[in-house]
Length: 109
Image (cartoon, rainbow, N blue to C red; front, side, top):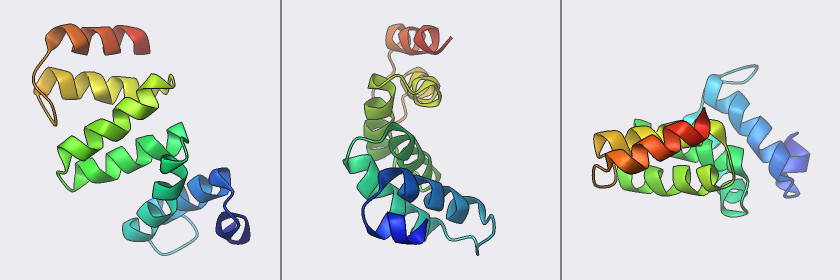
């Protein structure tokens, strides 16, 4: 997977990023995971966008995380739809908007 990721395969980037994010078979390294996810996310990969959002959220970079969740949610990524609903509900990275929160929660259901 390393070679495929180096060659720009976005699925390999995400798979390898997940291994580093969890420390599964490799040393846990969230920075390395982010370096793998970001290029895939910037190329429109919804799973990568969700992972980038989650890592940014853990760093309390809510506005940037919100943007990545929105990109993934717009592609129908259920986890991102739920997280986007939470952000609208709680006012993380955006203004509180219960109508939009409900929309995203219902879309995810």
